[in-house]
Length: 113
Length: 113
Image (cartoon, each protein chain N blue to C red):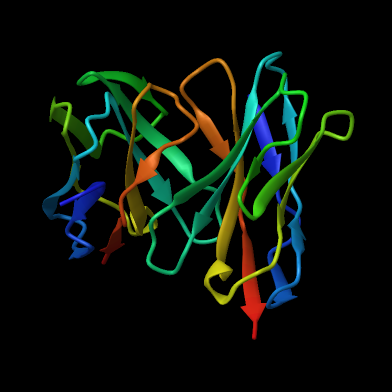
């Protein structure tokens, strides 16, 4: 079973600055993946980025990068050059060898102009 | 229509009512999912369908009954619900069952009175 912990209920960032959203995980699965989703106020979850446990390099997708530190069991999301449209809930999650994806409680990011 | 659509977007029902939530995916995906999102709780996986066959039932009460008549449509039939079942119900689809990259609909906001 996986456990995902997001310790920041809310975060604020100034427009154009970078922000890091924290995520730690705990799993007994030897092969697993970690990911982040964004949920704007409209409700739909939007897939952002994925990191496999055996990937050597940190995943990057445009302004999103996943800072994967296996020894610390952390998979933090870094958003560079924040935009007003980045204001949303962000969910970290993980999955292993079954069909179940486990999500954290989320972090509400607010980008200030 | 593109992506994943859900109807209705909002639903208020009494504890003795019977209603159904509908989800349709226009992406040609093979797997579909129902999730429950309650306030201040992580997203919870309810059901997984792979090629119209249910492959996961995550200990969901029998008052929730899923149906997948074909690979594009997914229903969640509701009967004799409880107030604690009030939540946002999200449908998702993916190309491969258990894929980390899932495409979500906007959700149905359900209120049980």
